[in-house]
Image (cartoon, rainbow over all chains, first blue to last red; front, side, top):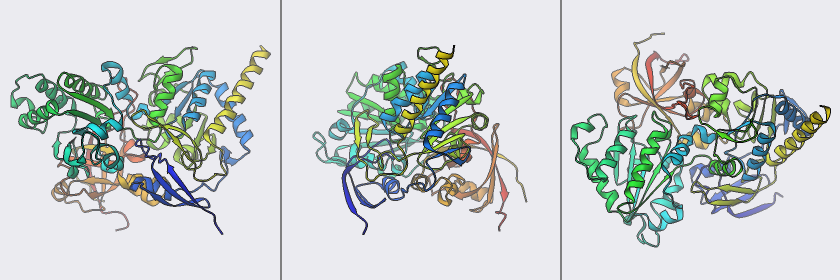
Length: 437
Length: 123
């Protein structure tokens, strides 16, 4: 008879909300119930299956873990410009080993942040970040603005757990005590849940944010100046008034700002508006982070190199330069001559030029599932899934660390175990090479 | 197949619920590949261009072109002149590799040339 197990306070690592109040019912190696999980969390847990194939392959052929780790170490130490990329769907414990490997081999280390909120990271450095935890939002926020994001489809429990629905210390009636605003170019499934929806024209985010800054400062504007934005001066005057008069406001922004023309400048405008509003009230801004531990990747790479993504370690000291050391660029410019891809799928979602080059160089891929990236890898490791088979630490989108509880064991090794094996072999090869000189 | 003239649209690539619920099953599965391989068009544009749900359409940028089926967006979700696709293999083929010094290629708000090809081959 299959053993039945209940895992209380399990953590969902599908998205950056990292909900840690999930109750899992586990029968053998299947999760049959995921109480409290949203539609995405339920799919994450209930659709989970352990990949049936081998844990390690070289050029598609099954090999032992040891052989694959030997080959991975050889690829990385032979390279002149190796890159290490991904990291947003694995534990902080694995991430820090990946940074160590990058450091030993003088690689560029970059995370999927560079193709989601990397521009936001640049804006934080340019303007500064007025930030707060989601717990503060839950207990205090009476004005919640979502800009360029669609939480109904990408972060369903953000609303019910943190930002709009819950009753809090200073918002005892929950949703009734809050005004919710959505600004987007599409009238998404999030729109009906907002009190105010402003549909701006595509690529007009910067202009609208800058007009709001002017209005918050009390400047008089001509309605004609907003002709191309899709919204009226009156709508923005109303919003600026609400922003200045709230007790605790927060602006959550998504990739509608960071992936659209303007990128870091759009986010800088949002952060500058937030900073300006603190002359009048308490106001905060925070990115809506996508992957389960992308925030952890930013933190770990920052602890260890001083920078959050796009870091070159080839000179023996860290250098940060988005556009130069970020993975889309190092691949599309054909600079990288080897790669290690951890828990991400650039073959499925990078520009064609970047994909084409990745297909020509030796690379290592670690992923719990078969993807376009693992399928074309020189060395592919099938690894255990974090948060389901592997415990560890992840960071919620507001930089709060959360522990993971494993539901059941996997026959596959963890990312951390594979990376530690590769690191050990890299060091051994480097020592042997130094001794031979 | 019948081809019609291209029109300039703006493409937004983003996340969708179906993409999120199907990706853990398999990125090679029917649900996931169908979701990332379909473009949503606003109903007014469908009518104006005489496009039926399921018709093949062509999206082209300076970087590449894809030919995929289309569906009508939910009423009011997309304004005329705008397309939506779930982010993935197909939308990325339209994306350039220039990151303008940020590491991030422009992947939302892309100018795309859009045209109807015709009914799917099986029809």
